[in-house]
Length: 393
Image (cartoon, rainbow, N blue to C red; front, side, top):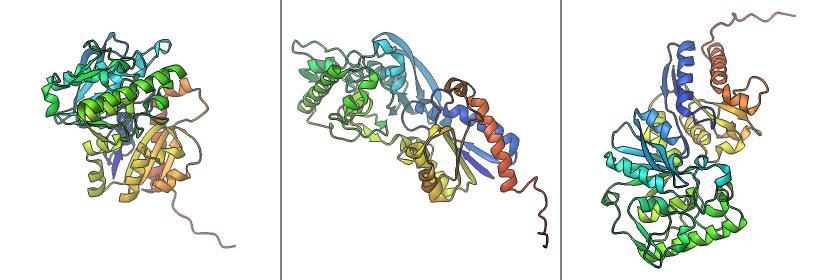
């Protein structure tokens, strides 16, 4: 029997690697003859760093960088198991949780620290950089990170503008010749499942600005500043990526890296899955069961999200897909139609959110033990009484 364990993280309680460790322990105890492969997954947002480093046998590194409010912080980046691919998660250096709620204002936050993390990766010999977007506190179009990488954004007096959302509006000249020369030979891949353009009602500002602390007036200023940045970029580079799906990711970081680093924007799930060669494994190897999970499962989970993508792969290759979730919402028929075989909540009784988050490891282990017993009974037909002949009336 071969089991593939490939979960997403449960935000606030279980990261994907912890899910895999718990699942492996329970499955080996209950199904000692099973062959188990664990691949902690992510979709390009928060958790991608830990998932890829754990799944490839890589290493976590720490560096002091500039936080979103300009103060120094310690952030993590990773080198994957191949020894040449770096994974930089924007949320580590420029994430919204790093900004206290009372100080959230995307006019004042910067992505500068994300650029510094990239420099640390390049200094360590990285030959390829995966940038995981998601969870940002910024709306600076990636200009802050680009400043850290050597690009100069100057005001009318020739001074560097602040590396913030407010600073975008002051740009009058852009100089690229001082950029780090390694940027010309190291490929950048952006992992994001966001398809928003840079500007407009679905753009970076109006879609994500309010959750970063922007009020109505601030939104107007940020939108105007991003448009100004896009216009100045087009004049300086002769490139304009403002309408590219995904340009609005992470406060416009997608736009900045598409234009200035000629980065390739990819689905976060696809990048993670390809790093593990997941599609090839499912196509070329025989699996009896695929176990995945996420914090909340609902009918929308099939629309490009990780569980939906795994369900489609399982359906295409004839592998049953079992989903474990912190909670189940809405009707699940769309999930079953998409390829999910069955879905279960971890909850055993009504619990407050805080209690459920704290108990998640034990709840996961308990649910897996129960499902293993069900598997043994229904699939391997163990511990079942012998069938009886029906009585004649």
